[in-house]
Image (cartoon, rainbow, N blue to C red):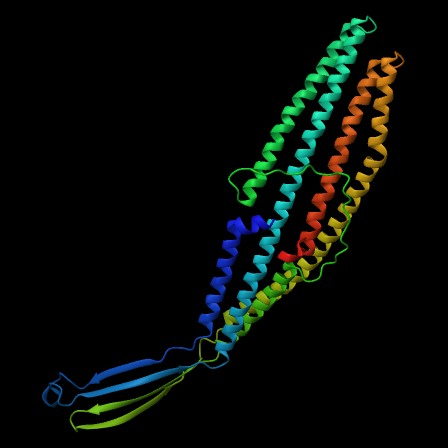
Length: 380
């Protein structure tokens, strides 16, 4: 998981988004630029206004002044944008964590499955040899040898398939963590490892944080839209050169737009609707997030209970049944069908135990994602 966070392009992508929002925040803090205006009047005309003898040259500096809290509203919206990018980055990284844990669990399951397939093949070979001895001794018909050989061939083919699945699972994990090759080992999924539930309750994970930040962002945009309804004032101050009188005079002015037709009502209405939508979405996401966490906790408990049943009762019982069936068959007390059924039952029981352990691991990963948890505190 640490390696995936370091190598994955997702980290660069999320960092770039945060930097982009930070750039917008820096831009939002800036004031409007002053304006320099130079104009020349009453020149190149007729009679007294020919040439530049009567020219009037005016130079002025204008300063726009934002009113209605435009700058503070703009900064607030930009700050909410940064918070939103950070929350989305947190969600994306937790989703990456979940994907890595799921891929690692499946790779570990494939490793364990390869071991089980090898054990099943060894058992099938032993039974095939035992049946062969009885057939040669005349105690079993040749058909039994054919059946045992077929079971052995199937078990050996399963070994090859499990090896291919093991390689594929490791390659998928390698691609996810950013490696070109699966040059690493994955320990087999240990079904005897107890998978306790954390008991964590959803507080303010990245999902809920993002939902609340979205509400804050929509409110900030509403404040910004309302501030745009207030017209800005433009002050100007300058000097005018009167060529005909060889004199200079000061000029000053103020410009105030008159909001007769445009009061930014459409944008205000749209921003108000976005606030209501964000609040509704946050409420919906909160219920969904809590339901997701509760469901994941239930799946962990169910899978662990299932695993305990298989580990403590079913698998030992199937192993004992196989042992008794082998002894009884060798002694001529049990038919070959009982031995074959015991062999298959033992294989199925062990795989069911492994599946329960896998389900518990996957549910544990889903639970941590739903709660917004990272299992390694140093990388929280």
